[in-house]
Structures are given as structure tokens and as C-alpha cells.
Image (cartoon, rainbow, N blue to C red; front, side):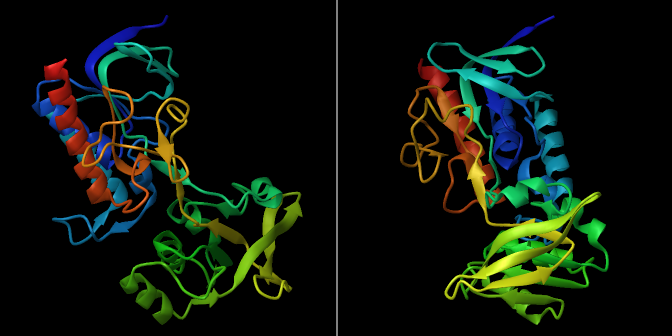
Length: 312
């Protein structure tokens, strides 16, 4: 039996932006409902050590998100384990449809759906997803104890994944299409000092290959970006770490977007192109993509939603 719930503020998403919005909206006595989505806690639930969250010299990503959820709940946010599959934005109150069958109506909406891992787009990559190809080292790294592993990418994510995987692998090869990493200097320094990691510059994955019965990776073919030469690289696991794309499926056809799908917000604001709908965190942020900036935007979104509701 379908149920309909109404709230002054509906928060869609449960990373640092969503939970912080919940704290502030609750303090404003707006009695917010937060729908967690497909990955409760967001991307930080698939990381290990977080060293740049103010107040914690080091904290485990999943632990930090458990604390944030508890904080939002303690303030008065109603947190629901559901997935919003459709959002109607052409009338007020806005209407969100949950996968559970519940319909949520809201006077204002805060979008905090975050981002998700990008893939290379190879047919062979798709074939071995979950069977040797992964985008989450913390989820799958322990499957490869004593094995050789390949990590693809050149930013913070790739370097962090490579470093983490040295806890399990006998060797980690970092495949990057350039000869210079985009990661933070402290991470690059750690990578270069780690004997288990070998960078492979000017290369990209051409094909993932392996066995069919049972399904499993045996290696990758890599192509030199300058000469085109193909090299065989034996490995048991391939971790794709080439960045993230905004999770904009609910609004990509109704809200203004840019930079590959990130939701556009007004200058110094979280207001979107539709009045009453606000966006915060990695859904809007193509530049910083940090937990602390996401949390700050969650705060902004809740405060702006409060003011907008008071004026309408």
C-alpha cells in the first residue's frame, strides 16, 4: 500500500552535504525528512583513513558517516532508507517518488545526491565488473592478498587506492596516460616512496582479459599513448580510479547543468534554476569535491531553504 508523506524540506542524499543539511534544517524547526538513497553515507563509506576532516587527525570514512547520521537524527531529522526514483519539479509542493512506493511531498527540496565512480567504457571492463574489475579498493582489496593488481588513474583517488592496496597486493602497477600525477603532493610523495607501487606512464587500458569459467581477470593489455605499442600486463585485479560523475539522474532534464552534468547554482548560493530546489555537495562541485566543502554547502542549502520558505 502506497503512503504519502509531507515535509517542509525534503533532503535527497546522505553524504556530508545531506546530513549537514539535516542538522541545520532541524535546528530551524523545519522537521526535515532525509531519504538516504542507494549508498547511505555516500562516497566516504567506501574510503578508509580520512586525514582532512577538521577535528580528527585521522578517522575512518564509514565511522565519520555513522557519526554524521547520528548527529542529524539527534537534531530531529527523520532519516528514511529509501531511494528516490523520480522528482516532479513543475508544481508545488514538489513530489518525489520512492522506490518503496512512498510518495514524498515537500515545500522545498535539497539535492545532495553526490557523485559516483566513472568507468573506462570498455566492453571487457563491463564483462569483468565484480569479477576482478572494481572501482572500490576498500570494498574489494582483501580479495587480492599476495596478488598483482593494476590501478588506473592519476588523481587523488587513484593514488589513495594504490596506497591502500599495498596492504594486500604483492605489487601494484599504477597505469596513467600522462607522466605526471594530479594528486596532492603528500600523496604523490607516499606513492613514490612505496616499493610495492610501480607507475606506468603514458599508458592506457586497451582491454581486460581473463577466464570465462570461472569468470576472472588474468591481466590487461595496455597501449602506449605516444607509440601505440601494446603491452601485456598480468594481474588478478583491476581498480578503476579515474574520477567521479555527478549523480544527476533525477534532475538532469529539468535543472541547468554544466561541466559534464554538475548542477548549476547561483553565485555564492545553493539555489538552482528552479526556485525552492537547492543543491549541495558533489552534485554541484566540479572543483573541490571535498567532504568539508560538501558539509559547508549542506549548511548553506538548509539556511537558504529556511529563508526561502519564510519569504514564500
